[in-house]
Image 1 (tube, helix red, strand yellow):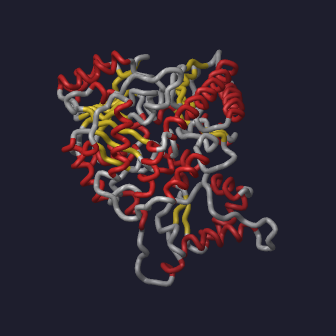
Image 2 (cartoon, rainbow, N blue to C red):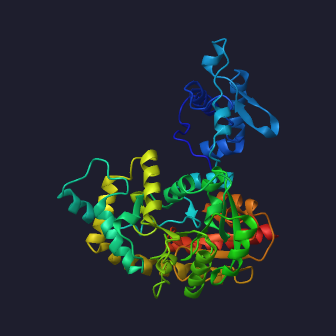
Image 3 (cartoon, rainbow, N blue to C red):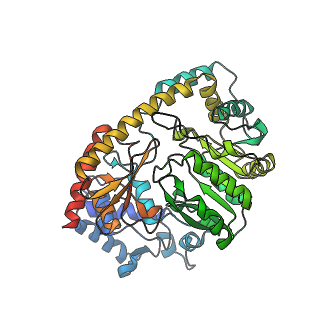
Length: 483
């Protein structure tokens, strides 16, 4: 649902339609809603402003009569002029033409809808891939910041690869995962997505082909596609990406690299087996195919530690390893890292300096303190326990309400359950129907256009009560659609 920073006042003597008309007119006059911009639909505006649709129609009719907007049937209503344009002889600037031709692709409409709805406090978020505010370490973070307040606080830029204290701590932490890396082979970045952006800009040519799991998190992003690259999906089984197909796909599609999330895969939750990991690394070494390993869920295992990262089996420098604190400590900290050969790290560090001149020095020092204090491992123990409880609640609710209409995996860690619904209907229709009922989902076709009967269920964000209530309501809505 569209959200605005303003609401009409029902107690005002000014009619609601007039308030809405004036609000939209001000947006246009101030240049916030520019020439060519498409307005939200009448239904969307009515829902956002909590008024009848007829009120919206009246307001838009008034704006159209003033020559500010124009409706073109199925093409929607667009801004065609502003109060300044009406007073001048020159044609007003059409920013929309720039927006439409920008190099970076826009998000899919459903992803934009998800991004908006995630800030609605009344929504049950069964698709959100981040920790609930209940799980974020508020008290430990205060303790960290208290320690920092008594030390020298870095306020300037850091060196290109990042704060040396943090990289020293990361080198020690990586050893616990079986990864040997010196500080010169580590680059601090502002989260996993920036790591992928740097790789796309610094290591790949336009037109390059990237092999990924099918389904894959990368399909929900436009980082590589916007750079003129294409993604080719390799099918998965219960042990992860089918390694026997890597050589075939590499030759068939002249692939440039392989991207994988081997630990608690997004969106399926699959944990690649240790044997499969060894085969993937050996195969890629043999055919000269670099690997980008996304390890942001590596530490979120339940019961027993997950298999070592692919990077731990890499002896030829063919694996770039991405890690992050976004899934374990806080997405707001914006601290991640890339581990790889020094030549690659130097190249990516140079590009990072050109784009943002380094990640926040304060965030880097706080991240270093998480490791130095021993609080990182302490916090992980707590998070693993809490996530396992949430997973079990979700599985129990699915067994109770979905046993006859769906199948699903049982994840051994991470955030996600990959739900396959044994009924055929429009996933888009389901998405908007459950959203109207106060539930936010991530449809499977965001990760694979053929996954029309899948949903990515996340148990990391919603409360225990909302997980149960949301899954029950979802099952009821699916039954209604089926009928």
